[in-house]
Image 1 (cartoon, helix red, strand yellow):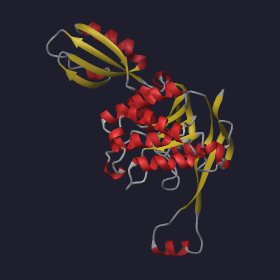
Image 2: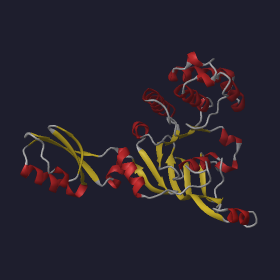
Image 3: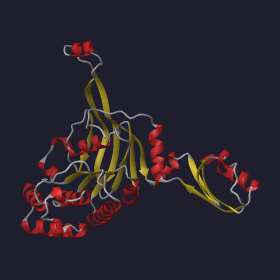
Image 4: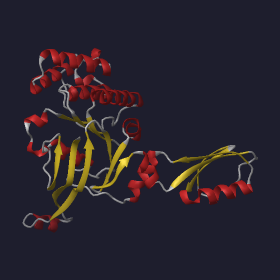
Length: 336
C-alpha cells in the first residue's frame, strides 16, 4: 500500500532580477523584470508504507522544496500528491496529526524553556491523553538517553542533545510519516551514530514511512536501501542505493601490493594514483579499462596481492552532482 504518491509535481517561483548600476535601479522602481525559476520539475515517485527512502541531491536541487510540498507548507504550481490519502496543501487537521517534519536547521522547541515544557505544549496541540503521553515520553527519553536533560533550558543543550529533543517532539504524537531534512547536520560522529541507531530501531519497530535527506552518506548507507536522486528539480534515479554506484560510477579502485622495491614509477599511465604506501598503491581506473590495466601491470611487474573495489558512495554522488553542472536555485531559503 502506497503511503506517498507524487505525480508530475512542479513548483515555480517568480524572482525579481535586480540590474546593476544606479540608472538600472531607478528604472527598476517603475519597470521590474522577473524570471521564473523551477524548484521542482515534473517529479514523480511512489513510496510504500513502512519504507525508509533517501532523497538525495546537491544544494538547490529541490529536496527541501519537495518536502515542504509534501508537508503542506508550500502549494505546487502543478501536479498532484497524496500522503496517507490526504492532499498535503489542503492542510487538513487530520493530516497534520499523521506526519512530522524534522529539519537540522530549524527548531520547534522553545529556546529559553526546558524541553519538557515544549513537550507538554505538543501534548495539548495533538490532544494526546495524559497516560499515553507519559508512556511515549518515557519510551523516547530512554531510547535517546536524555532523561537527565529534560529540565535544562534548550539553549544550554549541545547541538546533538537538541536534535535528540527535536526527534522526541516530532514523534510524541506517533506519526505515520516522518520527513527528515538533514537531521544530523553539524553533529559530531558520536551524536550522528546515536541518531542513526535510534532512527533505525524506531522505524523498524513502529513501521513508519520515512523520507530522509542528507549530505552525509553515512546516514544514508546506515538507514536506507532505496534512494531517489534529484537534480535541478528532476528525478534522475529511483531505485536501490547500491545501484547508484553501478549506474553512475565511471571508475573502480585497484589496490596493488608489489613485491619489488621500490614501487614502479609508471603507474600513472593506467589511472589516477590515490595513495602510495610502500609496498601498496591505490589506483583509480576507468571501469572499461580495469582488465586491460591489470594485464599490463602483471606483465610488467611482480605483484603479491590485488584488490578491485567500487568507489565510496559519497565520491560517486559528488562526481554525479559535479558533472550535472550548476544547480538552479529559487528565492533565498526556498530551494535546497
